[in-house]
Length: 202
Length: 202
Length: 202
Image (cartoon, rainbow over all chains, first blue to last red; front, side):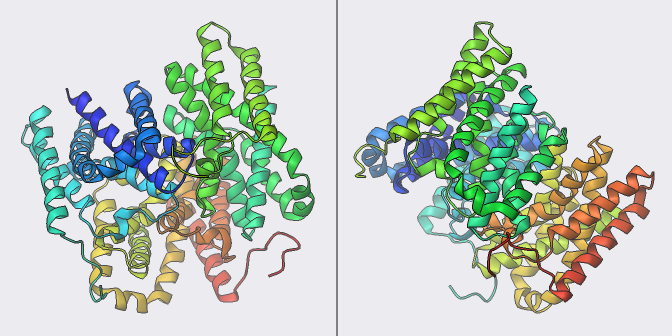
């Protein structure tokens, strides 16, 4: 069940990567690379840090799903782009799921709660950062002042906290993912913004 | 024998990295970094994924060869740039060899054929992608529509297929490398191009 | 003692990362990411190469110190920027310490002296390179012709040499760090410059 949800998150992230490829007029190879890195990059970073064989290289689904997303965007990108608002909601769901799963895996492998939270955030936002760097842009995350990393941080922190109190498994994952998702959606609707350094004019 | 061929591939990739350093007017340090990352980056990525100590940090040749390439380009870059067409042929040979070797190593370390193919492609194209990112450019691979990753993909697939039928060792490596090399050369001559997403005008 | 010095190096590198975030008008998340990557990125690269769990994910200090640097720069960046000349001196000290510590750790984990030196240099300069790439710039190291990697290389080489002669521990670290620090400071004062490829006009 969690695996299927995870694949759904990979699919949504891969769509956003392939769409950036279209927007930047990359060819089909570039679309595939961005789809793959956006959807799998965060988990790759997490697994490199945990010093284990990356999950993306152990499961067939993690290869086929980004491939399928690339094919879909290749043929139907105007349609996919038109449902972008819906994709942003799904992306928020993926963000929530990835931060929860990442934190859990990190704690299972013996990281302290503090480091597990960091690892969870990296799982959630790492793929998008790699996508932006490969596309020749400063990672959106660093400047655009939307709350994106912060909801992941809060969700990861809840996950680590629940783990400390002995609550693990899908209940904890669900709670943490929902919290991050809800925060992300609220931040989008209310246009909450991350602050600039003190004294910088907007 | 295979080790010597591999060093030859490293040398060619290092030349291309150092030449990009000259073109971008980097200093000698920048030339060396680009030479090293272009030639060793793909293998580094492969070994990080396989979760083993990188080959580049176990063999003296892998350090000395990029160093030699940097020195040669430093003093003789106009001559080296003049033989660029020949270098493109050698680069295609390096591409073929790297995808074959990468796929084989991945299968030896227990990856499934599908993932081994992906790993082989990353071995072949990863260094060039890192080079372009460090040089402040979108990786050529993503947009320039030449077939570069595709020949590596086909060569890796042959390697994995042969492995499944029990054909390994230098014969398999040679066959896979030649196939990727031949495809790459043919693609260059015939100017085959990777497609843009459907509906994008050229 | 060495741990405290190391944390001091992390702090200085994190200040420089967060300041770049202010200069580029990133938000507080971007400042934190740059602070973290600048200060911990080099060690991360080293530990990925050595195939061990990264030090940054085992010690609380390595998370809290970049966080503190981000908070300080967030509130007091005009003051911090004003003492930039002092920071450059501290940065040189961090450079020296990081190359010495990196080389030592690499030799402890069984790398050859040649590879340990390479690893030491990467420890010292890797974080800054990642910072520049994330900030959308070509790594300063590659083009600006200041001697930055070279002092790290010389310090690492001394460290490896001392290790070969049985001199290890804090005496060796101190000697190597001081040599790299001294060279870096001298290079800054005398404006020593790394050469461009032969024949390129300045």
